[in-house]
Structures are given as structure tokens and as C-alpha cells.
Amino acid sequence: MGKNDKTRRIDIINVACIDSHVDKTLLESLEASGIDCHYHCRDGFCGACRTNLVSGTVEYTTDPLAFIDDDEILPCCCYPTTDIKINIPR
Amino acid sequence: MKYTTFNQKSVNPLTEPMFFGNPVNVARYDQQKHSIFEKLIEKQISFFWRPEEVDVTRDRVDFQKLTEPEQHIFISNLKYQTLLDSVQGRSPNIAFLPIVSLPELETWIETWSFFETIHSRSYTHILRNLFSDPSNIFEDIVVNDQIKRRAADISKYYDDLIFHTQLWQTQGEGMHTVEGKTYEINMRVLKKKLYLCMNSVNALEAIRFYVSFACTFAFAERELMEGNAKIIRLIARDENLHLSSTQHILNLWAKGKDDPEMADIAKECHEEARQIFINAVEQEKEWADYLFQNGSMIGMNKEILCQYVEFIANQRMSAIGFDSPFDVKSNPLPWMNNYLNSDNVQVAPQESEISSYLVGQIDSAVGEGDFADFEL
Image (cartoon, rainbow over all chains, first blue to last red; front, side, top):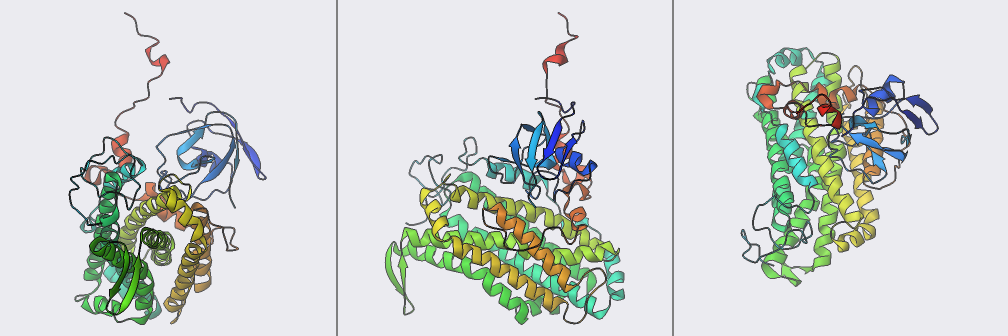
């Protein structure tokens, strides 16, 4: 299991391009940059933050329990392990 | 097919569908077809709580201070939630357990229903504290027209599935006449009833609770009825997990990862299932209308509440592969998220064993670098 100790580039399609924060979940990195992403539980079981992962990879800090499709991720409980491109549903 | 509590036939649960396969025999979890259900069980059990742990005594003073329209909103919502959890405390057991075929799913259904009974008990806990004799409130639930209309719509899909399952298990497939009415029983009909019932349950867990949640948390935002809000937070966290399970079931079917016939039915009944969702949204809006008929409360009115229902519905519908039919782009009640965030649910870890507290005990991540300064 890797460690969340490197800054990665996060490209949010049609929104912005930001840097991820070390030791923060993807959702926290988005919030730190003032980017809106819906959430409820912040613990991977409700699925409110479901987001499309267009390219790149992420690692989960807790096993996601909410239903996610093969091309979807839960930002509340993962961090990027490469530069990533995501599409937040509006 | 007759139901048996312990199926003597040797079956391989890894090749069974979720429902309408062979009845479960051994409750074993060492091998699982859909391991997600055991993970949900573990999570749900880690959420265990008792209503008595939450002190609601200050709410009585707050309640006296509420205006009459506010009291109407508060009490009506409690009545509605009591109805919802009365239904959910028994119906998944009665409707789904006789037809379930996977041990992990069977246990999830039992766990799920058990938690709904905790919710039911907590409404009594709240009401007992507000009134010396809460029986008027409970008695009104079966008399109140507004609540009865909702009850009819929620229970009809369950009742339909339960009745057809009973006919199938006692009489088998074919045409059966009961009290002058003829019913056609075959696997396709049963599976359709199951699909529609699951959609109705999904809509219930997804949006029906949220109008009353929003009102409860709107009181809490004004620092009123906070004991009650604490309990409703715990309930909301559980309901989120239940919703996750019905979404999994519907998606497993629709994506053909379980019973291929169910994938077919999901396509065939798509429009009907979508309508169940839309009807639930409409009914929730009517409910908002009823709540605010005597006047509104600070920080909340009918329009915002209706928008919130639409916003939530968009999300919930896209989660099961439906379209998002409502034109609401941003969350009209952003503070709701603070209450639905499970990290903010206050519990003493040693008392209720929150999962993060348990999981955080061991750091199981071992990298190569951890042995760098290790010499033999």
C-alpha cells in the first residue's frame, strides 16, 4: 500500500486544475481549493460524492461500501496515486 | 416452491441468484457471491447505538417555546417517521427473507430490519420525553389522512410481493383464485413484483426520510430540539447505509451481475420503476405543503424544502442509472451536509465502538522501507 505523501495534479474537467494536498483525501483537496463537490457521510458508504475518474489512478483509505461503477470513484475516501482527470457531476 | 427453514438439499450459494433460487441452508460467510453485503453488515453493526444514550430532556423546554405551526411541523414529522420505520422494521423480513438465496444477503436483511426497530424505539423515547402521555400522537398515525395516503403507497408494493410469494409457496405456479379474484403466478410475475418492490424501498430510503430530516436539522440550526437532532443524525447515518444496499441490489440486477432474467426485467420495467421514484418526489412535496399549511418556521419554507427533495432525487436517481429529471443544480440546504457527515456524529468510541476507532488500532500498511534499518 502506497503512502499519500506526494502532490499530484488534479484536472477537474470544465472547472479547474489544482494540486492535491499531502495526507488529505481527494475531497479535502478539492475543498481546500474551493471546488464544490457534494458529500454526506465522508466515510465511503453513502455514495453522495460519486465522481467520474477519466484518467489516472487512486487509492482508497477505507473500503468504499457505496455502489460505484467501474469508472467512478468516491473522493471522500481516496487520494490520487498519479496525476488524475476527473469529472464532477453537476 | 415450499419454503423450508433448513434446506436439506446441498446447494452451492456461489451460483445462486440473490432471490428466488434455493432457500438458504447453512449461514456461512467464508465464501460469498456478493461480499458487499457482509461489509455492510460489519459497518452497520459498528454503528450500533441505543436511543437511551441520548439525553433529550432539554427538548421538552424547547418544545414549549416553539410556535404552534412549528409544533405542528415537528410532531407531524415524527409521526411520519414513526410510520416509515414501522413499515421498515418488519417488511424487509417478511417480504425478502422467504425468497432470499444467499446467506450474506439474508443476514444483511435481518441486520437492516433490526436497526429500523431501534429507530422505532427512539421515536417513543423522544415522544415520551415531550408528553406525559404520547398515546394521542401514536393513535393519530392510523387516522391522519395525510399519513395514511403515504402508508398506502409505501406498503402496497411490499404487500403485493408478499401475497404473490405466499401463493407461489403454497400453491405453486399457475392460476389461483382467492376470494373470487384470480391471480397468475409464475416466476416472471414474481420477479417483476420483486423488482418494483425493491425500487419502492429504494425510493423510500433515498428520499422519503429527507423532508423530515431537513426540518429536524433546521430546528437544530437554531439550537432547538438538539437531543432529537442527535438521534435523527444517528438514524440518518443508518438510512444512508440501507440506501447503499438497495442501490447495490438494483445495480447488480441492472448490470446483469446476478440473475440474467432480472437484468431483462430491469429494462422492461424501467419506466414503471422511474415513475415510482417520481411519485415519491411528488408525495414528499405534498407532505411539505401539509407541514407548512399553518405557517413556516425560521430558516425553512415549503419552496426550499421542495427544491431540496428534487436535488436529492436527482442524485439518487442517477445512482441507479436513471436520468436526473429535475432542474436543481446546487444544494439549496448546504448545512444539511454537516448533519449527514458521519464524522460529526458524536458518540463515545468506547461505548458504541465506531468503526474508525476500531480500524485505527492497527496500522497494517507495511512497506519495504519499514525494514531499512533492520540488521541481522
